[in-house]
Image (tube, rainbow, N blue to C red):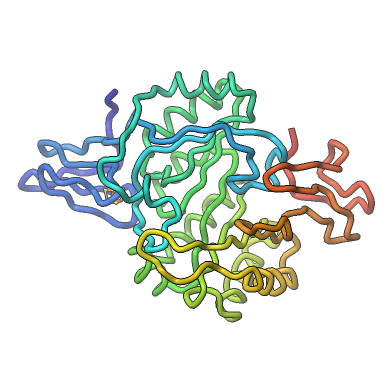
Length: 331
Ligand code: SF4
């Protein structure tokens, strides 16, 4: 399956410039982008992952994690290989960073049919980096929207403003990684930059997309009190009603630091809850920090066990006990 690449320019000597993401690659003839999704083929940009998937599963939407978007529903979750970041700790490195990952062909129509048959709320583009799968996500999301399905991105938010503006009208919800508030963390550990990620989060929010943020807490790298305070303050400044997920890291790919102790996540939770009403913990063995609790009166709105959600909302995005509005998108 082929499709035309967008957001690229021809350069002299058969080179091409990619304007999709802030990495800003210039590719020689035959050269592949470090995202493994685009390549210079005879002086034109080719798409390496259009119509190819590496993973597909019907997941609880809580697994994305999205806790305030159709809680308790399933969603067909799909991925292509590749990512434009190269985080040393990547928890999904076997599909995001490994060359030659085996893929299966799939069309946008087939995926939308599968999503409809799954009985879930829609399609999640996840596991690796969907923004570098741009043209396929756009075409599939467009069909999914027409079929009445919801489109979800789970993303690093590292995309240029113009392509993101073209995609956001098709996107209903996103979980965006905010890995650190330190540019040097993004540069040293992810080969990226912080500024474009913050810009993208603002752009998602301004476009009215339902967003939740995830911070993977890594001991010794982004878990100091002041680092967590900076992150929480930035979120509160943008919109304090945005749910924030702190997630436990486990050693993976090139990062050997020990796994995040539960007490570190509890500390992050305590700092964040002084400022933000909707804070969650993830990747812990225990279910602590996973319920949605009304910040007004303490009533448990949604009880979660693992990825199973039991809602006590009575069909309305408001606390049934005290009436406080709750920023949750319901069926
Ligand atoms: S999308 Fe890929 S090829 Fe394009 S600039 Fe980003 S990393 Fe480079």
